[in-house]
Length: 156
Image 1 (tube, one colour):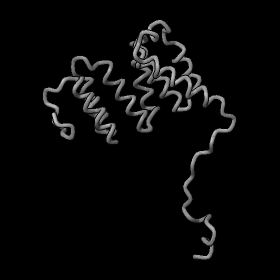
Image 2 (image 1 turned 180 degrees about the horizontal axis):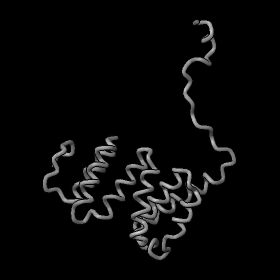
Image 3 (image 1 turned 180 degrees about the vertical axis):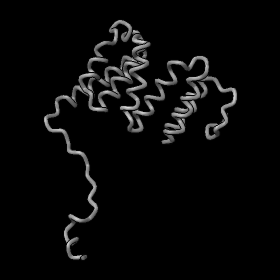
Image 4 (image 1 turned 60 degrees about the horizontal axis):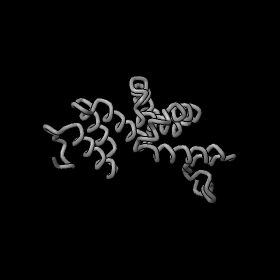
């Protein structure tokens, strides 16, 4: 299977998810999301593929859309640690900090201790604990269309 190709033929869910990771690495988010959708219809991709799709949505600046997918998966698979972690991350990035903390705190500590996702959870906690301590959040960037620039009034 060639990574640039749209012909996935008999690819397994795992092969498709590998392709999605490569596409994401090159900034082809929408193509990666489409590949994840294909993978979710293959055997073995029922939980992981939509989870990765949601992670890509979050990474591409669409955390609210990702949250819808992850809330559904979380309701169906509360023990799926990766779903919980990506849901918490999407919540934090969408401005739903309380919900993000609730999801993080609901993860079974014993299961997390034995999982490969322990360090991801630790980093997520450290990042958002530091954010919670900020007294003054930076203002969003605004774009000037030139009307308020010095000398703009002279051009009429």
